[in-house]
Length: 121
Image (cartoon, rainbow, N blue to C red; front, side):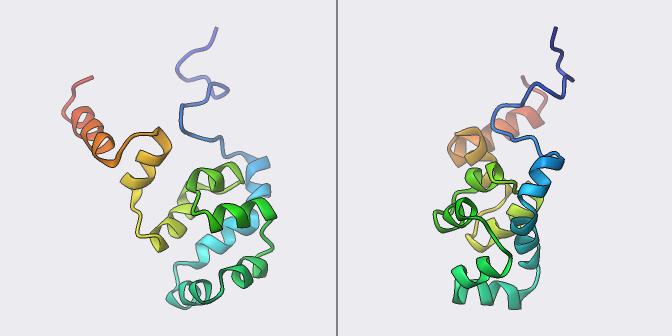
């Protein structure tokens, strides 16, 4: 019987980030972390392909970068904490990412947060 706390039961819209995914996404996450620095953001924006190559990204990861596919990056081993750095380059915030993950519009996602924050189910 599965319970609400069962770690094998995925939460819809999320991807389990375990050791296997961490290894898969190591270069991707390292690259995204680099975006903490303005010089790194500038270098990426100047030549995204060269910057991705610098961190050894896979073809699938590069494709997701080109397509600005946040979900694809998570599926390719991206940690949401690091992928959020890339999303910042796209002028997306955490609410935008939450909407993308849940398949809701930004307005629907914000309304859901307000409703849940008020204690309503």
